Image 1 (cartoon, rainbow, N blue to C red):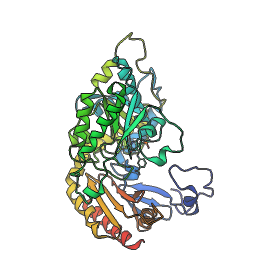
Image 2: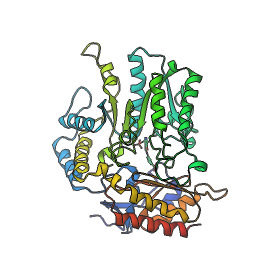
Image 3: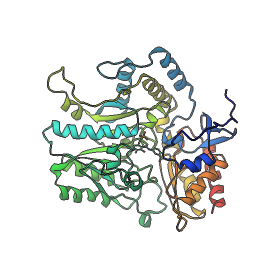
Image 4: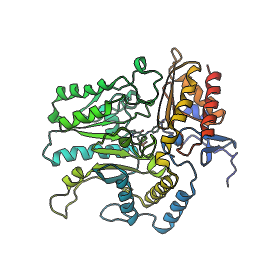
Length: 441
Ligand code: PXG
């Protein structure tokens, strides 16, 4: 094993993603190992993982079955061409995944990330509309504060200003409905907020403005994660589904973070009992161990393409690494682990304990809202006047020093631990966080 105290001597070459590079490089935070609920830092400390990496390591870290599966797969079949060739694990995985989704979502298109899943779903939506003689439906509708990754499709339907403003005109023909975050009416709600289902009616305005015959699809995160954990108001998602149905518009759920057990059901579609036409996933599909994403689509959509001469490619889309053997092996072993340990529903058992723990921070300084659902929590802080994001980032740094990994976005702390977390670790997490909030300015 390498000497964990040795730091790399040149941090310059690596342009780090979504990171303040100069600040980081002046005082780096290096993780060198991980097991179960903990990371090990380069200075030999244990850090409790309050975020499942980046919402992805749902089975925890260093899980033996997954590690073994990847090792074996690398030795057996390292790569198989993804186009016009197959390998058995890709088909096995697709079938096992399809069996976990509500009907009629029974086909799977593999990608390598959430961003690619989003681009894939948007492209399938456009191509499907054309395939069924609705080629005028070219508009894609997203939502303010939505995060759908960083591809041009994802940022075009996404609604985070900083992710969009420096990248030109992006896709044309997109529009956005309002987000549902409403602290005035819903602050400190436990679970789904009472107020705000009427935000779904925004979709009617957008439809009236553009005419339904121009709109292909609407994409939303069932629970918006990256933008600070925005829980959908009661009835909101059902209403979006109704409106889409009335107007021939496809509904896409971006389940990159809600998929694979985060809410206590396998997918958010189960939790909210609303079935979209397409679901985008990534992250938890391999518990973050090998990059992979998947788009689930209904049989109607798949079958619409299975026409014409049989020797013709039906959809001109795919990636060199779609259904990569290592990713498939990791995903199959991840599903085994989820099933053996009941992890896809474990968050439901822990949800009320977790809820009490998150809301116990209500009396801490500068806390203006607390939200939770499944094993997701968010603590929104009053920004320091003239220095937005500073307070939450101080909390992040202080937590890391105190042995806890949290995520922050703006002045919001987001929590999403691996689904193997114990009640004692939940207590430890919130004990540390209480100290942190009492320490920072
Ligand atoms: N859709 C959603 C809903 C996501 O949350 C993506 C798409 C893009 O996935 P990739 O694999 O291309 O990164 C995401 C990613 C955070 C955080 O801290 C969230 C994500 C990524 C990194 C950090 O909230 N979500």
